[in-house]
Length: 120
Image (cartoon, rainbow, N blue to C red; front, side):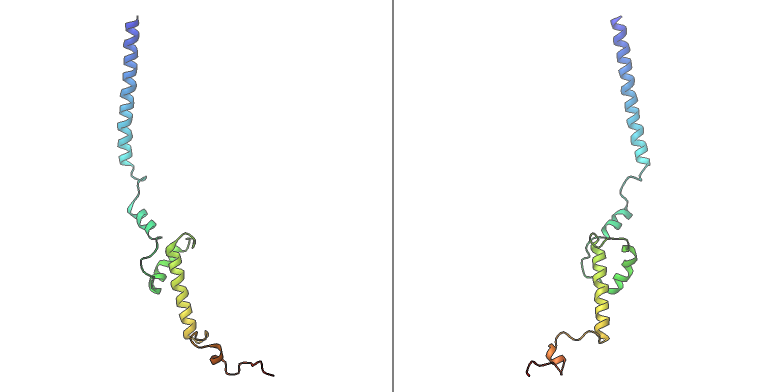
């Protein structure tokens, strides 16, 4: 009777080992077929697109990259900050060339000929 129990127990444990081995093989096979959980080249490019640019962006680069980073937070996306800097510099240059911003290399006294004096 004990021998029959030992044989039944070994057959049962062998069946479990065989089933777990087959389960492992099938798991590996289906994992190999399902590549959706892996990192793709597109994911890597998208993550790297938010990194700090090596050189300051030109206005043309900023305008081409801006639609890709509209949803980004300025606090987290280095590229969004670089885009904002480039576009702000373009706006400053446009305003200064239009003459709305006085030149900074001239002192206020030279700029205004009728500067009020304190003499009474």
